[in-house]
Image (tube, rainbow, N blue to C red; front, side, top):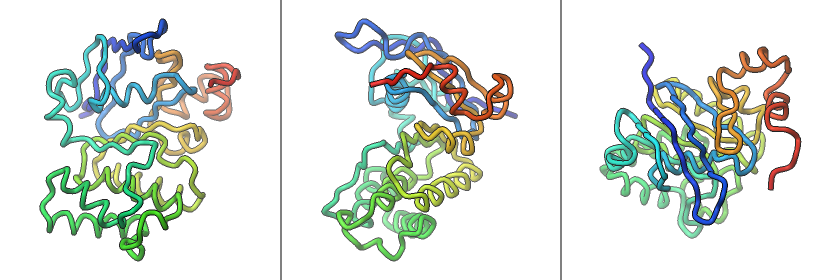
Length: 248
């Protein structure tokens, strides 16, 4: 039986001093077990939606639920259930990978033995076991991205938010990240993902929503949307629905 892990009804968010809302009465449901892509041009509202769902931004009106808990009233019950991997690297460059991960494990309240076992498991999975005691300042961009991701997975979240998880990295690191995320998803973690790599999103996501001006302009399974709109790729669909004008 399919279940919704995220329910958004009439979400409205306008930033102080702005005439246009960042999110404009948006409604969306995301099913448990999906790899769901929030896609759109710069300024479309994707990161704002994720920040609101994670409790990092307030919103003006609407109803939001994660795992049947209210984002407005029960965010402290939600936080242990979610993992957040921001676009910016949220790590300490003067510490090793292990030292960084121990800090995050402490934030999640993991016991020492459980944390060490989980760290070893994920460092091995993402090909970092041999460099785990190297300072982050000596890591490549792709290696930092992988540690950034591991930090959001330590506590085995039911729901994982990924904001541009493969931006600016080499092809090998991208494949390691995406292949392992697919396995993590198969094991039960729902993923909500944003990216400007539309070819990647087409292959990775089980469902998507294209967003522009804070509203959903189309949503569904990538292959079905491509067929319905008589285009050959998700990138062509993106340009068809949002126009080709650059967004700054």
